[in-house]
Image 1: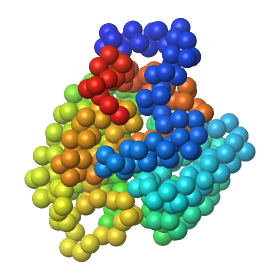
Image 2 (image 1 turned 90 degrees about the horizontal axis):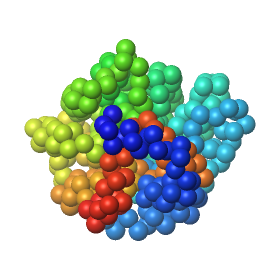
Image 3 (image 1 turned 90 degrees about the vertical axis):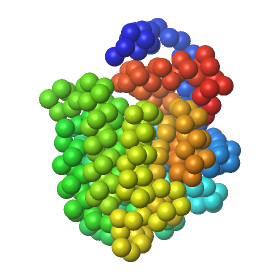
Length: 325
């Protein structure tokens, strides 16, 4: 963690809530579903597509999962009615994974069925190491039931990621769909890299493995070394804008909003200049759009668990013209 990041984290307990709210407005669509729909309608003009997250995660009782079941159901209806190019991002712990995995599986399966009827993809977000295996197990179980509109996030920093890529790809074949990121959670040193260069190298290795496995690969990174590596890796494999995916002899059927085997993803409010450049070059770019009343908890967690985000916050505040949404 750099000095600037340590200063930001140290100041958080003393920062008035209204200031956090002012900063958060850049990175959160708003408190409700209507806010998210309005923002996506505006940003669609920039050739962006979206993955939408209802803020909130680990629940204390199974009764709390009903809120997420109902809200994501409303979200599916809203996406379908609006015609927006958007899919879902869900946290399995919000559906009860750490309380009763059988109930969580049933909750997620019900949501998947509804999403599938509207040809909407569902991404299982990856939380901390307590649920890495459980999250992967959910995705594999859904594929076994014939629900292939689901994929997982893997984190480059974890030592286990290479083997997870191989095992998931073998189990789900051409329907494999990954999002790869460095990882927001600062995990123990015996299971994860902690050095920046090691994390970047491990993430780039994971991207190569995903592409070579034939999986759909969503590259979720704001780091220049990762983006540059990805562009080079795509070019060397004959992949890119306007090109059919050369890794498969026959066309692979995927959800309607998917690209030719890959896409780039960005957090709302972070490196919009890079996203627009990639979109202008013809790459599919997807924006992670969180909304909900848990904006304060989301904002604090992002800064607490990964102070690198502080540099993006500072740039947005001090030089907003260089870092539009």
